[in-house]
Structures are given as C-alpha cells and as structure tokens.
Image (cartoon, rainbow, N blue to C red; front, side, top):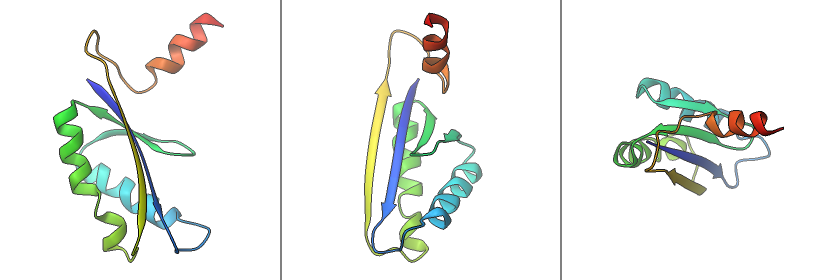
Length: 97
C-alpha cells in the first residue's frame, strides 16, 4: 500500500484554481479512489500500479477544462514493510507528543 501526493497547478489561469481542483476531486470520486484533499495537495491511497493508472486517468482533467499549461508535483511513499493509510503518519506523531 502506498500514498501518492498530487499537486496540479494550471498556469496562466488566474489566482484561484479551485475549479480545477474541484474537477479533479470529482474525477477521483467517480473512480472510487480513497483520497483526502488538503490545503496544498491531494493525498491518494492505493497500490502503486493502481495509483499510476489513476494518475493517467485524472491527469488530463485540467486540460479538458481549459487549462493550456499545468505544472504537476507527484510524490509517492511506497512502504513495503507494513500497510499505510491516509492519516497514519499524523496519528503516529500525535502519539509521540
């Protein structure tokens, strides 16, 4: 199980890009993804091959809604010694404080 952090920033689309974020969230829901929107990115949970397939499906979303240039930041945390889920890291830190 892995976590993927995805940030997609449409350039030249003004200060607010919320409409693009909302479209990506809708697409994730339609795909049945386990995800969480944060203030700076979207976290998506799954096995790496599934995450990469999902990424391929949602990557075109901003372009389909009018963006002509998008900068993306994709980070994958692939932990093989135990199953991880969204929120596990936060809970682990809270237990230590």
